[in-house]
Image 1 (cartoon, one colour):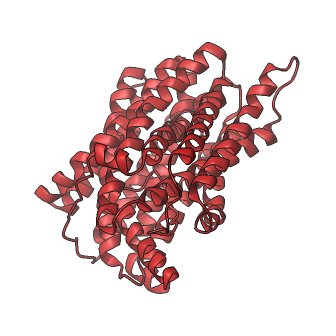
Image 2: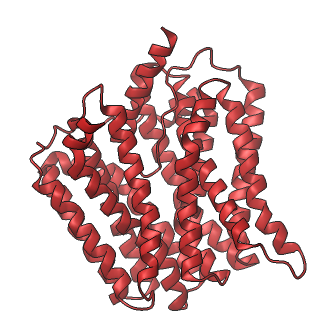
Image 3: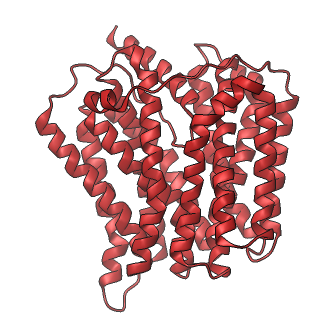
Length: 421
């Protein structure tokens, strides 16, 4: 662990600061959009555009890195992020915000790919698992801490947009000044979608549905909070606990999934997600009743605590049916499918919220979890359990690029072989 910190401290600190900036802007826009009197549908388009940019970035950034190098791409995209964060307050127009969200999603995707290739290069086979765990923890710490910073200023002013811009600018200083040599960059072409779906229909469908859940949680939570009449403090607490749940429940769920049929774990997690997320909807149907805030926080924590492990679980499940040589290519394809689902998530959530009120936020995610549970149950009748897992469960996040996922798969594959021995 100390060896990892010595070799990668600059990168890990930089990633934490980046996630502080990204976590702040995601929540802040939902709050500021309400102040600017943008409609729910307009804000849903704004939030969706981040995932459009992120998806394009995941495709285009590798070629940019090969052409001009890590350092130039890293610095250029970092400057773009810092500038856009300030421009939100300068141009409070939902169409301008939508375009800027495409830019910032593209830039963050490229930054993640660059940073994770650096981290992978700085790690050895023995330390790569620890490096990835620290990387994921620093990401989560950054996003959770960002919600605390939201309470340090007035969302109707400029300061809360300036703070993440400064944090992002500072994030690149330790990384670019470190002596770590930029690695040679290689990207993996994804497996064809036809082959991927044939290998695991459940993995493909599950990743698409989870994309909608993630984008609703990441993009629309603050929009829901403003529509529900919550204060900035309450919104920040709710969003923070989505990620706290995701961090805390990864490891126990992963431990269980390595010891029983992964499909059963997927099924029961999906059922639990649907049930918990329906609680605020049921409260909304009761006359003269409103969901207690503590219960809302618990629902948010459970929702995040289920969706994040499910992402890692579906990746591990798909790999159980693949040769080791196809795992990296499959992960790239699955992440693309997840990105496609993420683009539609905020827009559909916004449409439902506009039609039925803030409870539509929870209803949309509950329906997606119920759909995943139903499809999992059906697939369990169509296919036998994989004879033996090829890879153990490794905690991962939708914010990771394919570089980190490939490194995680190498680690989990090695762990599975040791368990077999």
